[in-house]
Image 1 (cartoon, one colour):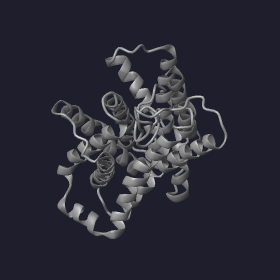
Image 2: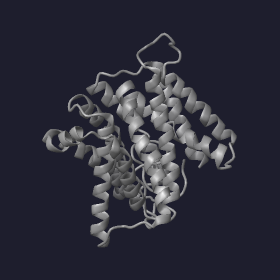
Image 3: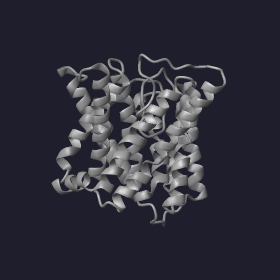
Length: 329
């Protein structure tokens, strides 16, 4: 999962320096691999840890907005993309003195990116959290690198090495344990919720691939701004006027929506980008892999969720697959 810097990383796994989500340095920034020193490196790791912490809180925002503010999953996902995109466009315009424009030839690419890498990803992930809990959903999200390796082998001609094969077996075997396949009579985790969780890993993998292509021509922040913008546009027709009105006119609800767009979405990306300036990408990615563990902890502390021992083992297998793929990269 480790390749030269591709930009961000919205919520999680894979390689935070590869542009999975809202992180990673821009093409004009330099990641300091092998940088040694005292305070700058410690500060850098502190920022990476802050990013992992912010990403891990995503489920808390979703849970609050779903169950205490009575918003639909589509409305929450829409505002998440819209708030983050608008903030980015305002920031980019203020910095450059103009709106970052794209050509007509780029529109189909960003439309596909927005539809499958943002809208579909946001929607299936929030539904996974709603149905199986934030701990299980975060672990299943980390199957993204395995999906990317599989897609690359099937459609992009990349060789499926022995190391990648082992990683795939670990990832999907771990996912089976997280889904409690060993307890077929259980109804605590429904099949639909598990499929949403695996779907979030798949769509997150698509986000990674689109992001890698996009940053070949534009800065990571411009790619993210347009991807989120198109994603919000695709989700807009599914919004009800009443949900939109209630979201923007209820102070408490609007505050949580702004927090969702600014903290686990953009705030984590900014912290990760800054941390990468003094921390090796390999070290940053390992620290960022704390996210599912933190998400499970928040779920246990605040939402009374519990992972069984075999589910914890499954999560460890998935993270082991992530580390193997990082070494392969």
